[in-house]
Length: 362
Image (cartoon, rainbow, N blue to C red; front, side, top):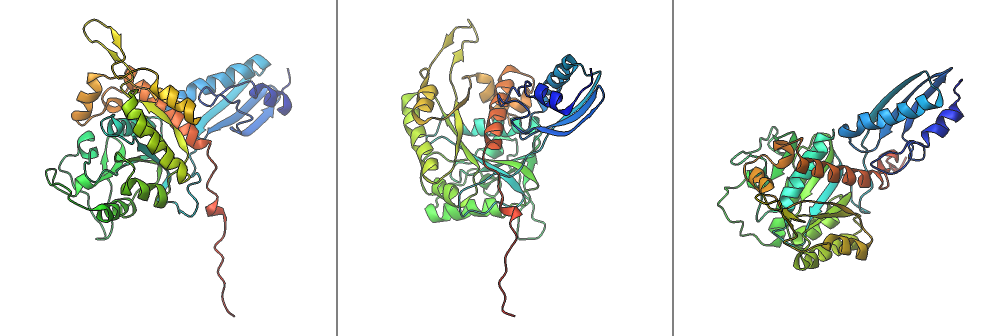
């Protein structure tokens, strides 16, 4: 059977990306389509990192075109991550395409552990990723990445080089002060320090910068929401009603300043007894689903209350790095892909396409 462009395009409309739920044609993923007799070659370009999914999508395309009658099918699947729109009046950060804020509204829900595993999962899927510890009073990233006692270098005396660990670029106030030194600072000092950490770090070609937000909705959170170019926010909560009350406040704060909510992550969703295997919802059940329904947002995933997550985090090698092929790491990677897909669905940043207009008297 002789192939034609129209026949191939019609067949590709039936190939669904399992991560977006959209067909490859309507999602505009097809590039360089060439049809010659009964041979077809094309590229599939995804807007999100998905190393673990590339072969699956490639095989779906090959199977569909082979069923159509193609004798030879050549398909390359790749990803290309671009910058997306942020709050009005806020400029993008040099060296960073997209900033993802991970917030909770309340402490003690595992937000930092979730943030660092999310960053590691995005990196495992093929993205260039950094993480910024925005909790000036209680920095966690040095411990989580096994960088306790490390200090960043400055090559020019004005800016700092990000620390590197487990494939991530990282920055935290914890790299600059003694771990036992209390940060007895008022709000303006804290926000200034945060902006310096963000703007004076020489981030290198990041697809995503994950910002581990401090709990609450005070000065630091408002500074991030109003002055930092945030592409979207992920809200971490437990199913407990008390945690959900504060998570709702965090969600509403981002909504008020025009930052899209990428979705909710329900942490400590269920506990499986290591002795008898009995499942128990220690902090309640279905809290994230109820909150998502109330605000019209997506539940990105649910994570268990598991001793290994705590042990690996305390040991400086979080779950995605410690057990990359494990079941819990797979959960984090699923959440990371959903976050990246939601980012890819946001409006693209178009500011770089506009020329600078200079008015001069001649």
